[in-house]
Amino acid sequence: MAPAVALWIVRAAGVYLALGLLFAIPFLARGAGVLEPAARHAGLFFRLLLLPGAVLLWPWLLARWSAHRREGQP
Amino acid sequence: MSHTHRAVSWTPFKRAYDAVLALALAVFLALFVGLGSSFYPNATLETLLIRSLGLAALLLLHVTLAIGPLCRLSPRFLPLLYNRRHLGVATFLVALAHGGFALFQFHALGNANPLVSVLSANPRWDSLTDFPFQPLGLGALLILLLMAATSHDFWLGVLTPAGWKRLHRLVYLAYLLIVGHVALGALQVQKSLVYPGLVACGAVTLAGLHLAARWRDRKRSGGEAPQREDFAEVCRLKAIPTGRARTARVSGHQVAVFRYDGRIAAVSNVCPHQNGPLGEGAVVDGLITCPWHGHQFQPGSGRAPAPYADCVPTFDVRLEGGRVWVRTCPNPAGSPAAVAEIERGE
Figure (cartoon, chains in turn red, green):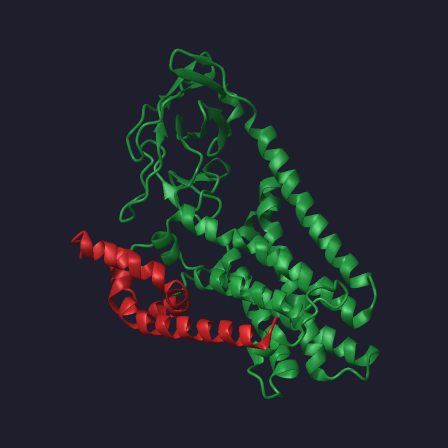
């Protein structure tokens, strides 16, 4: 693979993960409990455990969370 | 599913499982590094660590992938299944340590970004013997990361069991990438067919186990049960041990018929948690208990005990002349079904 292509891939991945980290903060604080009621009263360590998954899957989780809001669910 | 999620739902069994796993891993790494430094005095500690961690991750992945078919072939292996997710996360962590050491030793000392170096240092994509095997390992590591990151029950609820299962089937793609990573990497370092041969043995063993389990499943479920009106004959009453079940295929539905407390009840054989085989479980404290993760359901209604809300479809049952008949159409999940009472002498 050409170094320029590899650099582009690594930078794109970095941007994706940085955006995921930004998304993860409100998601872990509130969104997780919206999508899964059993997570509403869960502790801090549990929420931190969800951090990698939230960072990796953030576009899909954002879409699910937005759909919940549009449907008027809490 | 727990009423409120916790980080880890520890049980004494899980603690023992994890302790044995950590001990076995520590012994394996110590032996590998100790013996490696004796047999190959020129090898550096970093090299030995990279190889030992890589081999450990490969072995753990084989065990993780073998547990499913082994449990379908024999219930003796079921205890290995109950904490398989911890085994999967451990596999990822060991693979991450392997990748981290390799990244540092081979790619972190130059001017290029180490990850860019992994992807671009070897441009021989058209060569089998010099193929850039490290990007294959990186790809597998990313898949294992995604799986470890979504291993908590929370993700089962958010992704739905079917979606979670589909996502976690990516482990087979990760396995193929790892097979390529190890076989091609070993060929470049050793110029010997021993390691590729061992990897091939592992792949053939896993494929054989999966095929044997599938064959056993087909043999066990058999064909469609004979039908009369809207009921199908499933088995003789005596064929069902007390507290256990017999499974059958009725009008395309997988049904588990349980015998408990002098009664016969039938529910779907598919646990809503992770599609586990309820019929291979037992009735514990009056509740059908899934053998995979211990989710429980009331035999007559298919409902999980409060405060849980999971439900499975139920089937009406009747007994005629010592034979068990099940209605071909299931009741909605969580609906009370007709339960057959076993009379004395039956």
